[in-house]
Image 1 (cartoon, helix red, strand yellow):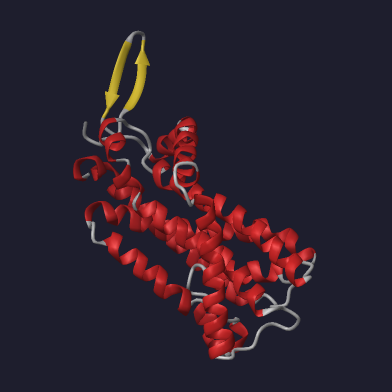
Image 2 (cartoon, helix red, strand yellow):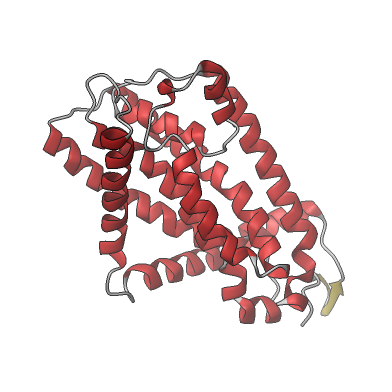
Length: 284
């Protein structure tokens, strides 16, 4: 079946199939198909954690190894300063939480449509459900990493301050910052399959040019503002502020710039996804 949208209207016992859906109807469909979203999200989480031997272990090992490498490269080799009263490892790990949220959503979502080709080619439903459901794996990873961070807090004898209450706000910012680029890449990956090779490179390179292994305070002010053009940076700085007792003061102008960037990416990502959505079934 072609991926043309199908509208169902009943007049007595007659079922009329319309060739397209309005934008408003499409967003209502997202709510109507919420059970499908839950099923797909649960399936992806189960595959990640229940049907793999190292699912949960990998969610723990990956951030720990990355923390050790970045702390060594930036803290021991480059000898960059840490925040006052904060161990370098905690400074790095607190930034890895939103960074892994960003990269996991990007990685999981980008391959989600290809992985659900059989479903997409046979049944109508808003295709936006597929990459967003795949992104829920990253939220589970984030929960595991927060528990690991709590263990590190105990290890270092570090007690977070009241700023931690704002963590849900910056988690939402990180989620929205991830979804815009993820939806754009997901839609492009359907037509241009080479994108699946580009994403791992971007993720590997991005961790070194994002303020994960170092604090933004080591950069000149003008470069700090430029860093906020990276959609992940607002969440990174917000997590550090929330988790490390405000050791790094938030930059209101930088956060405003980052919020605009996040919204632009989200509009472009959703817009391009919706524009190309009808051709997914034919291409896949």
